[in-house]
Image 1: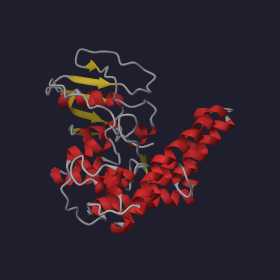
Image 2: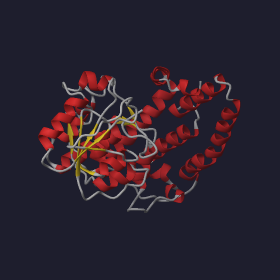
Image 3: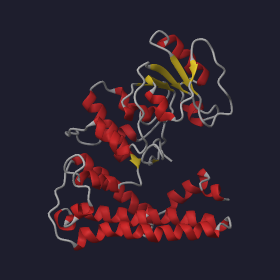
Image 4: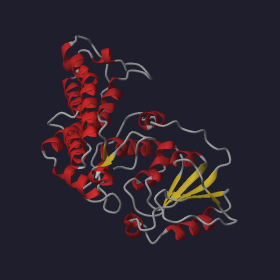
Length: 333
């Protein structure tokens, strides 16, 4: 599970062997890359990752404080001494004269915020609506802060987290380069195929039909190979991480006695195979001259996603351990 989650965003997952807060690999990985010399558009990043409908920005412009679950280990271990109460005091003393203050409880909190005269309790339907009500977001190390960065709302991070290095620069171009790296190359997204879509998209909304991929295997064989791997993974075929995921979901359903659910899952996989594998057929069996983009950061993104999709498909140990330890398989039991 990563900081961007369905249904509001295209889902992501962390791929970091040192930690997603202190000692994170995010900034060291970025520092080893050559300078990014590409025009990265913030709006295109938003459109790429947004799945939900973005509400309009509230003109009132509140200072929003996103609280975390009280026993969150990230809050306790990597909060730089800040807990929820200390963060609230910080916001009042530092931003109290900048506008109304809105405090949002974590959806998993066991406690209800008791109102006070100096702040309002946020009742937004979801995190996206809350961000759009605010002109600045303050948090300790909540993933809601990354959502705000993506949506273009200024963020103050009081603790340690993997996306904090994005906020450490004032230059807008450099900040967008770091954000693009973080979203595409640091986070392991099971939607690596969308990177290929971005490469084939000639103009906004152009190059998005299946026929636009005809001949891709001859013009960009590496790109076509990556796309084929992603399609196999989305279908749930070996040797990809998508097969591992579907295998364990079906196994959990059978272990729980949910045979009907497993049958429905298999049937939907068969139906989806028609659509996903059709892309592979068009790339390798149809002639064409597709126009594509070739930028270093985008090629690296697709390469990392393809490698992870394949490696975790033939060496699924880390994925299976994550599934067991996080209780994903217990959801159906």
